[in-house]
Length: 315
Image (spheres, rainbow, N blue to C red):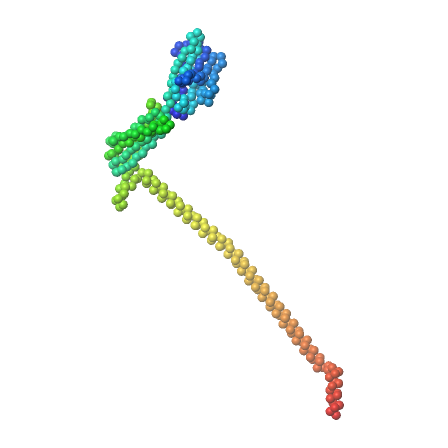
């Protein structure tokens, strides 16, 4: 027997020593026998086409032989024959069958309706139908009101769900388990702690201390991390602006100094130009005064002649 996905080993062995020349493995089906692999005394071992990616020899002896089927599927289920071809007896045939089963992990669920009562349910899917067993680990507690439901799926697997009621527990240390098995295959089991129920007198509602508290705790942690992240971003923005202002202040001072120096320079140039104009005006005035003085000291001939004529007429 092998589970889906596992390896299956098939073996045959002669009870008495014979002169065997060849060992042949066949898969038996309603349609007939199909050769899988052959091991001979002179030509060694050989896996037939169609099984080379599936089957290999584990032991290719002529007195005992074994093959391994990898990654077992439902199609590998059935009976196989091993033929020991001896001389002079002929073929000595052995037969072995492979049973393939499928079993998935069980799913255990516990719901606390009150402080002292809980509903325990467990589901398992397999082929053939799995056996589901519920149990409580404390010796002074017991399960009651058992019920079971089976559903056949489209892929020929069966889902079995078992439910029971646990009463009389008083704390959150109570542990329940679910064990599942198919035929004589290995057992799979899961365990779970029963969540504690706390009464909230203010609102009149019950609050579970199990997964709900974990969810609330996770929400508070997420909110706290978000607040810290926002504060960090705001602090970073503030520091960058402050640094930018500190860097731009010296540039402003340099600009102001340059503007002041330019103003002083313009003022000096303006003062120098006004002094130059004053000097030009003074020179012009001096030149005009000198011309008037020269005119007074050196009268022109026309004016002298006019005065002489005036004297003559007066005489």
